[in-house]
Length: 148
Image 1 (cartoon, one colour):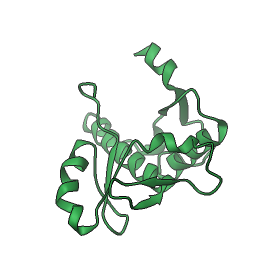
Image 2: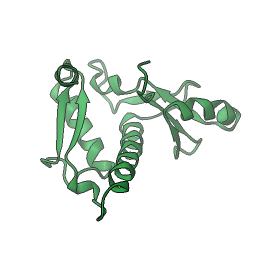
Image 3: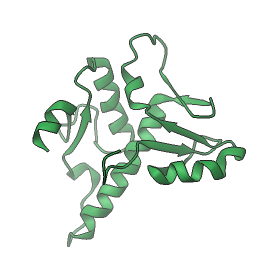
């Protein structure tokens, strides 16, 4: 993993409620394991599963599953909350999530369906006020890498 990059790991409790994100999720997983905690990793790519016809699922390390959209929504909510805290720490007047121009990177190989689901997840997470909001841009990871 690259220095300064947060692991895309999500820990939910046995009821599917958010517990932790990133490396803290991994650390906490072993404390939750016997209580039914679910640790999800590398779930983003399942959005573009060409073999899935039903609602895609994310599978935790212990074999339990949750709807993939729900897992991504929890992750985006966490990212949004952290970003808003950082942004508003230096502002005289607090900004709302709908005032931010969000950019989410997506793999270049993704089809339109997967991009649409990512947009829906951002809406469900409260990042944007409508699924077709111009306050969200989906940027191809390869293009974002060129700008970094």
